[in-house]
Length: 422
Image (cartoon, rainbow, N blue to C red; front, side, top):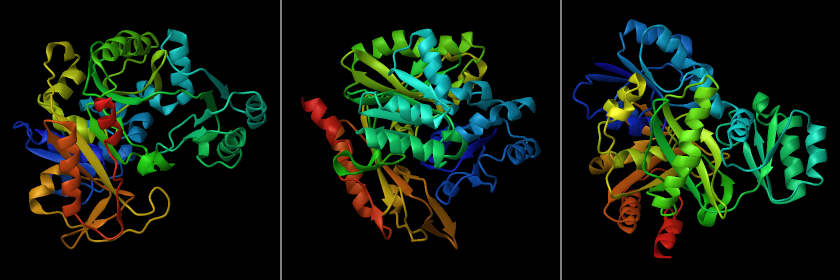
């Protein structure tokens, strides 16, 4: 069996490593993949959003199954295009991927079906948005409607910051078309939890919860990033919270999408805030999170391909999905200066015995040498019996890996450890 995985990051590397354990799979192609993924799959220089070339490749190579992971190709309709050629896929069709592709759609869906989320207002005119901010409570949250590489959300702690956020999105075009419409919403407080879930449009199977660390610097200081590290499970996600989320958020979301004629099949990501009034949705993603995948999939004991096929075939309720009761930690090694300006092209040295623990995100291969080629370069993961051991193990591995201008946070998991102790 030949599999095709769309994407080029650490998330895709984690998925490919897990798929490799299935004996039915003879060959895995990554489009486009990266220098590190090349050790585990055949990389093909087709961009993740080049639907036409991806479909052409899949047809020519007689691909048996495709896994479409990044948000852009899902929102653009890559699954639809592949399925039209008879190639089964893991991932939602275009009309369901809108749950991430448009913040306005997802907020209005939650409002319509009574799914708990922050109060909000929608604007397509900058003057009206600025007028609204004169009396809106602060802090507040300003979100670009469309995809913006995970950076289209600005938490404004003052009215001036909120006004600047609106102007940068709507007047200065900071996020292009994604910022032509915006959502201004209530600022929620409480611990954040990420829950990835498998769903075939009928059954929802949540994966192990995780905690992401979005800010660039220790103590949750600095700019927002795509994620500087993760731990799983998240100590704030108790059995009681999980039961409430299933009843009030997970199942109602899938049912709402069905009622809208947009059945969702794939990985549905719930970004949650555990507020004093209970769990609320901060955001939906239509795919595996990055770097949440790098701690969640190592804890999956069931065969990933079997689960993915069950999702595609609508048989998830008949399929056992088991997770380990261990703990995982992933520390992101980034290029100094990320998420702003940084240099690339430095040699990466990973001891051979650690390669199974490292998910490569931003790297390329040149003359047999792995070189840095992005902001987030590596995800270094450990699975241990306790969270403290997983964190310690990941940092021990990080110290053995080197590249010029390497930067990483020193406090990944510290908040989770404190919560467990408290």
